[in-house]
Length: 376
Image (cartoon, rainbow, N blue to C red; front, side, top):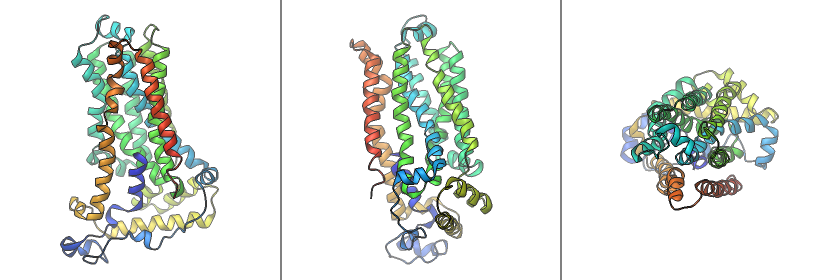
């Protein structure tokens, strides 16, 4: 789902959309060249600056190893989020967790619900476009990812040390703020640094990271279920992985598109040359000119407004993007992740084996989907 939305967003700039009908007539000065009633065709597709080629995804990644490294590292944000999904469900059934949080007894349903829902509730606020877009535009793409990972790491580190259910909920809320930032910023960063031939693949790595994290969370919980204070040790991989993301992002180049938006053409070109090291000079130059033209076109179109969503073409893009994410959530899969272990434990089924099976099937399905994602 991340790959689909990122790919759609990368095909057309928000302010390059040509309005239709009466809205076009009223706002034609904001959309140069608009003609009332004409079907919209994205201008970058009418005469592409980068011609179609025969490079495969594997060839591109071999030629541009830094892009592969950057996309893989950014996907660690998905790993830590997915890990938490299966960890918390398994932790609720661990005797060591019950001993620490409630004297050996099962936690009240309200407390369990607050613990499992804290991450998602907090993530809503920082993933909101009003917050995430401001961070992405002001801090930059890579620094926003690093900030989200740092907030998540701090929250998990405190959770590892406390022995109170109330404090655990509070700092899971803090971790959720970091999750929201990473969920909003990682797909943007990956979409803007990836070559068009591998944009879907690298965008899908974030979802792959989530499913891999789910499987690892279930596996680690299974291995530590009988260990004293095993639930605390389960949090150590999250601290290590999120710390790796914090410092790893610092070493990566910024998105060339962001640098151009800030008017820093020299830094944009340097970032692109670093990302495309190994590619032909004319390929790099053509991509830079295409990106520059898109940014200039966006600036000439004026400041984006919410009324721009009235444009039918843009409205369809947004609707599809929302529907893809929404229906995935409404499938009920997250309920199995969070509450499957306690429910199946009450039914006499090994909760940890259940978590590994469902997360393993999920991981396998994601791997299969990445194969054809960039096929024409």
